[in-house]
Image 1 (tube, rainbow, N blue to C red):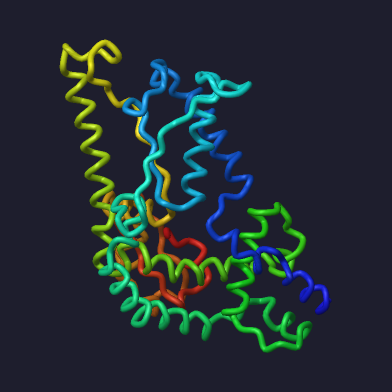
Image 2 (cartoon, rainbow, N blue to C red; image 1 turned 90 degrees about the vertical axis):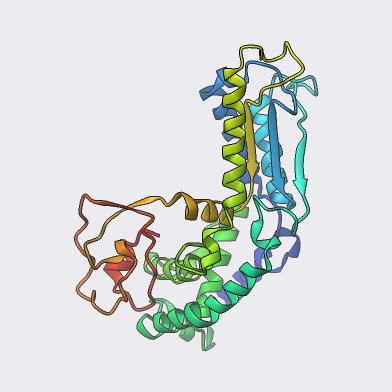
Amino acid sequence: MAANIAHWLNSDVLSNEFLSAELVEQGRIDHYQFGKRARDRYGQLFAPGYHPLRYKFMSSELSRTSESAMAFSIGLFEGTGSVGRSNVQPIFLRTLPMGRELELASKFACPAWRAGFDVVKRTVIEKEIVKFDHKYVIPSLPLLRNMTGVDLTNDDLSVLYQACGFEYAITGEAARLCSVLTDDDRLLLEYRSDIKYSYKYSNAGAEINSYLGCDLLASMLGQIEERIQLDLDPTISDGKTDKIATRGVFRFGHSETIYFLSNILKPRWPALGTSGPGNGSGDGDDHDDGLDTVTDVLLPGSIESLKGDWPIDRIKNRNF
């Protein structure tokens, strides 16, 4: 078994540097299908033909986000253009260099975010991870140590957990890296990862996380307002004047794009009692008896601060 594990760890996922920014094949198919479904569901919005001012596409300057936009647009406009057997409609895709793009990849344009994250990583994340590793041993860790003869740690299994996810996304193969981990392993390793990303991107982290979605939200609201004004102008008729009304804006970014936007929009979570994680004030020390009773009260923007020593029931019922 140890030899098999060593063989599995030769996976292309761990060694192919060219995969780091690519969109996997399933991702291309998914976005193509998203485009097809969008046209089926909102067909009335796409009645006029494509024009780059009528339907705007933008992505960050990364190959996988640009490929996502292209695959989506093919599904959206397939059969309405003039290219190839399926009458594909080419689209104009707007991108800005990393470091200058303020809507979809704002963290790369903000040195203050990096500085804030470095402080949070040192003062909060690393301490919570230490608490987690002190409280929890990943269930398969002792067995894997015995089989490999290597003094593996939770850190090592976290890398294996990430590799499992990437390998499954890229190859659809779950019988190699993923087979090493049990459901209980994955539950804990997912939470260990969530500790990092909740502080890295959500309102639980550096204060600046609350503001990095401002440009994106302002742009979205500005475009909606512009369209409302066009609709109120009786002289505007799409295609009959020199003014073309925007019918759709499609942005392709990153997970943190959604994190930063939701930090402003403040999603509503079920309140978990007066002292539970719903109010973001629990320190994890008073809740070893499990999760507080969920009430029917909704608190806006209640993002819990994940703790490394939370009991397993609370981990299972976190709202992040």
